Length: 220
Image (cartoon, rainbow, N blue to C red; front, side, top):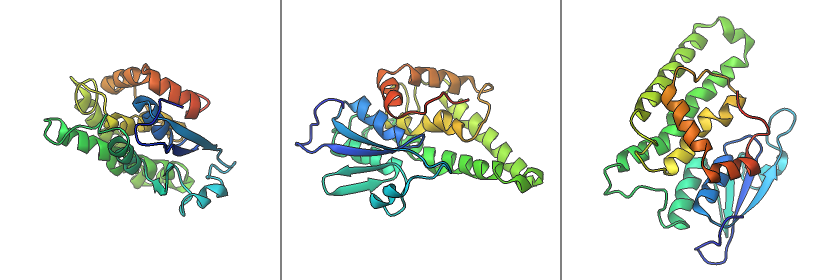
């Protein structure tokens, strides 16, 4: 899959769990045109990762890659690793560029702020006793505030780090696409996010990655 690797003869293996963050890594490899091997694991009926994934990494979670003797987990770490070790910094922003701080911010915001909040909302949505709790209402308001912040940040920009697609976009798209299979939230008030998703979904590499590793049905 992809073009021949520029880093020797080793081929990165991407271990992908169905309907999960690991689709990011497949997308990244397609954007970079790097050769890779894809191994897909299906979720169990409970939604959990299957036991064989624990043979790859002690936490048994996705994404995981193998690059020779290196086994690496965590979306952001994998994205940073591949971009710098195998792609010569393509899809990154150099430190001297004016967009560097913004690039770093969104690269880490995806998991550090956005996904962590959405996961709290997801857990509360699955606890019936939480429906009457003021905590759930506060989290719901925080999600709306977060979405408004992201939407405003995209105003006047094509992508999160400016006018050029970067690895920050690989990290940022998932919460607004596949994550909505697990947690339904309304994006209609956020025109900039909606326009951004149209740009992302029109990218050939994204479409190829979703064919290989995306959910079987479109998010809500």
